[in-house]
Image (cartoon, rainbow, N blue to C red; front, top):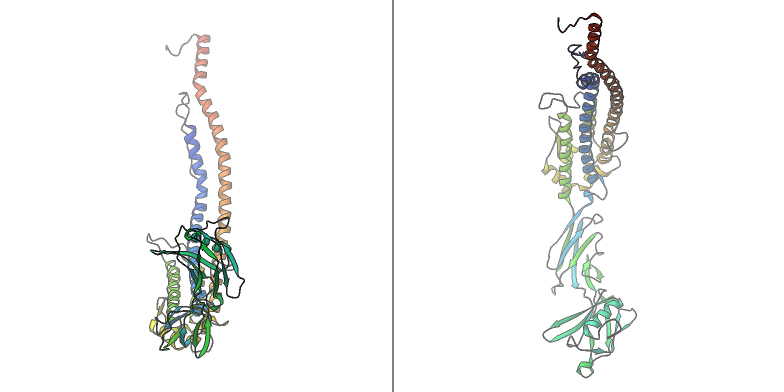
Amino acid sequence: MGNVGLSFGSATSGQGFDVTATVNQIVTNLQAVETPWKSQLTKLANQDTQLSSLGTQLSALTTDLQNLSDFIGVMAGKQGSSSNENILSLSSADSSAIAGTHTITVRNLAQTSSAASDIVVASDVLTGSVTIQVGSGDARTINAGDASTPATISGLATAINRANIGVTATVLTDVKGSRLSIVSSTGGSAGTLTVSSSLANSSSGDAGVSLMQIQPGKDANILVDGVELSSASNTVTNAIPGVVFQLLSAPASGEAVQVVVTNDTNSVASAVNQFVKDYNAVMKAIYAQEGNDSSGAPEPLYGSPILARLQEALQSGLISTYGTGAVNALYSLGISFNRDGSLSLNGDTLTSILNSNYADVTAFFQDSGGFGATFGKTLNSLGNVYSTGTLTLALKENASQEKALKGSIAKQDELIAMQKDRLTAQLNAANQTLQAIPPLVDQISMMYSAITGYNSKNS
């Protein structure tokens, strides 16, 4: 602690001294003891930033690995193609689909049943009712001009829709007039409409308005690998497990379409490339902490044993072998180590092994003792997600030190505040004493003059 000198000036000047400046100088000296504590807090905070950043990067690497090792992740992805998109178009192939080739012949398309009325004028007043039956369901009768809808063709359409009987009613209008159109909500033969009408057009002398079936419901009929199948919709979802395709036409020639379902190797290759990229990012961040920053000062984690622990665990997990299959190490996938510890990926090697031995690649990532499960445990043991992770424990240790340092600073601040109050009071009293000296001297001089008759001012 530095020394503080008090300058009172002349004791008889009556001017005293600057109490605030003096107290602040003393407080500054007292606060100097906190400087190393605050420096340590800054150092720990910088370490926390780097530890958390490494944790984030390890989490990204973990997500990459989970994408490859999850049974419903990218390895389960499928893609498909059709040899004739004019007849059959593939919509999707999900993880439950099995790679293979299927032959499909479309004999006829599915169609949805519909009915329509005679042409009337949109404003004509209708009486009577229509009766509608969907498939084998109950027949329902809808009156024209009920209490809530006008007795027009538009009002009748509204009443039918409100009845919720499994059809959709609309009014179709052209230059000739308007028609009531009814379409079944159920596709295929099960949704065939049976309709009848007792409608009359009172605006045209109670002329009858008929309602007739325009199109019956029909199921699509297809052959899948020689097996005859039916579908109520042209969007077929259950013919090939996990595959959805759209029937577009039924050629009279009976042309067969080849549907090929394959593993989504492009997405897998992209996922492996992302894993390599994120691994290299982690290693680069670790190496960056082993030197000095741009100003020449050591990085926050310089010399920390945590860096060596991370490097050793990560590299050991990558160079190990897993199982006895054709793919039992990362080099089997075209992944190799560079001299700086980073990884390189040979895309041609990866593509080749994915096309020739997809099952072993899957096993490498997804078997219980495979790379995916084992390296996943390694990543969990290093990160800051789990309570026992290396980075989690390091952050906890720092937090404990930070708490102790902040407590010491708080106690020192409390002590300084008390000393500041005491010093201020003492120095204010001393200052008042100094300021009171000149009047006392004058008093004494006056008393001396009165006794001796001597006046020092006139001498």
